[in-house]
Amino acid sequence: MNEAYIATFYSHFGAMAFHKKCKEAGFKSRIMPVPRALSSSCGTCVWFTGDCKLASDWGMEELEQMVKCVEKGGYEKIL
Image (tube, rainbow, N blue to C red; front, side):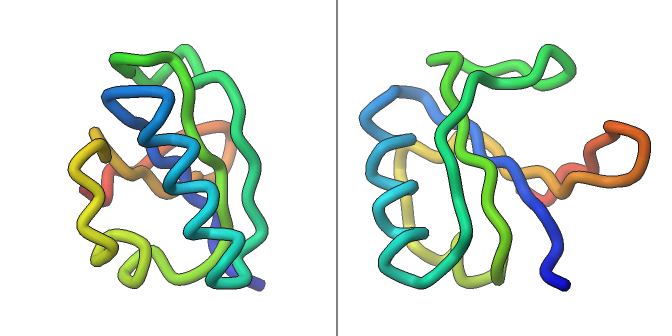
């Protein structure tokens, strides 16, 4: 099973563009509010499963941070 990740963004537009790239790459993804444990400029994030290395290489200037979802609702910072 693929790991789950959350990407946060500086703008809602960035989240929408990233979500589109996830769909094009065949990743399971959804746009959602940023969890309280994570801080974000725009309040919108993308939850996705797939290759986080590929996703981080997309060169998204709007990408604020990327975290791996870990057990018991925790997060491990990737970028």
